[in-house]
Image (cartoon, rainbow, N blue to C red; front, top):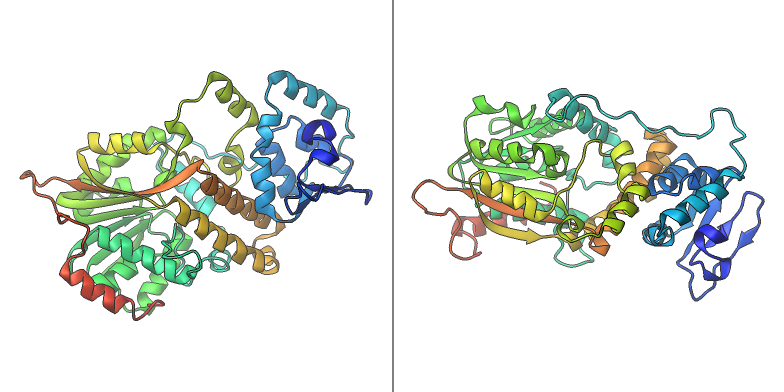
Length: 440
């Protein structure tokens, strides 16, 4: 422990061993959490070899636990690769770990890595399998920690103490306003989730909306809500791949909110080309998605090697978002413009996503017993760690989230958005009506 994480007097956290022995953290360094090591063989699995994936699996399997502030533990864990700064040091720690006790229970590790998706990246079945792995955990599970509209994307906060419900409502309004939705227009929502955006747009902006998702669980819930809200004459949801919409014609406005990170670098070019074809000349496309800030920066060869040895992001790929891949904003915007779009507006919501994730984590932790009953302790621990790690990533600036408003020219050079960011007159009336009912 001293060689891997520093002597007790140098650590920012306390440690309790399976024997009951404790090593307190120095008060001046204490980050507010205790690392609990549950068995003699737990360290072997966590350090053989030392990596982000091994640490995450040790937590998820219950080999170790964190009592207190999990966010502080994740923040400190993000600095661990600096301790393993050389291949020689990692080899030394691996050699030490080989001398630790082996697993004493049948089967070794308490939890195995989940199977990866199969097929090529352009395979429709593979894409659907990856999405369902993430979203079909269960509608009841998501309802424990999302807002009542089940909006599973970054909210938009007027202030840090604003409620999640109000901030999500404001985000839906922000998207509708950026798209300059007008009554009678056709709106397509790619990756519509549980249908929050299309219901909002139909109810308050008078559009006709189609939402598509690859998750049957999401589609079932969205259809029930549309029926309950009596919006079925102007609003529908289908289980469809966005690449299979050619028979639907073109749409006045297109939105993709939170789906972008599922596309992957290999499909990014065709993604923007397909959406361009689905957007009518003179129409707008709003792409709301996570981008990787580190990809836009120069990284030394040594830094890239350390990232590979540390197995960065492999936990999320194996357990949470199969085939998910982030790209830089520059890369995405470049491909969008190559497809024919003109970039009209770019908004960064990084701090808003950190606040959103903080709300989600607190809500999930407050419903721990119910979450474990619904999905089991392992899945609960996966999601608690995933959401906390995501919050840390947005707080520290490793990742960000941007809204790009892209326009397809009508051939005359005219642009749909006005000269300024002032709302259209009819949007002021709609916003006033929308503010009367948050729940909708």
